[in-house]
Image (cartoon, rainbow, N blue to C red; front, side, top):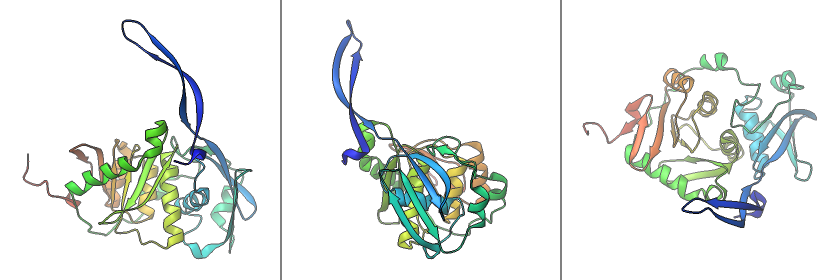
Length: 270
């Protein structure tokens, strides 16, 4: 595990019993760092994140916000680690980015998201047309694999995990303090690698909010799996966009919240 993802901090640990047991020890604490994204020389947004693959985070964020749609639009990308900057030059000016300059937001991508998010516009998106189907046992297996890969969470307990999988294996995996950030890093990888995502699955440890759902919809993702719960708006959007939501995937249990026909192998069982 790379030490730039966590620091060692001296803590006082107290355990209760007949008497309190007090001990001083070093504990691993997740690193949180502000990263500011510039587009064509102008400051766009500051994200609070785990400082790993921040170029992927920047590109994934721009893709998720609709500021760019393909790698061919990128002229260059420069990372300044010490200054906490990612500078993205686009071949052509982005009208959307220009409208957002000055609306600076600091976010971990874990709470309300950013000021750029517009639910009403997104709800008018066209429903996905894919007919992908996945066995229930495969969903349980993917969540088990996600948890096995989550080493930073095991070390610190302070991050979310996200992955992208095909029908054979997990292709990309990231951990970050922000559940949105972890997915945006995956989006950035897909953008750079030219990966077709309409037959892939997103797996996450975090709550399924409307923002997460819309990130997936822009990638034509038909199935989203989470260890946690969805929100009401996330379910509403999933229903209208023809996306299958599966939450509370834990052990041998899962809850299907929308378009359950995609999940196979459970019908007729009680």
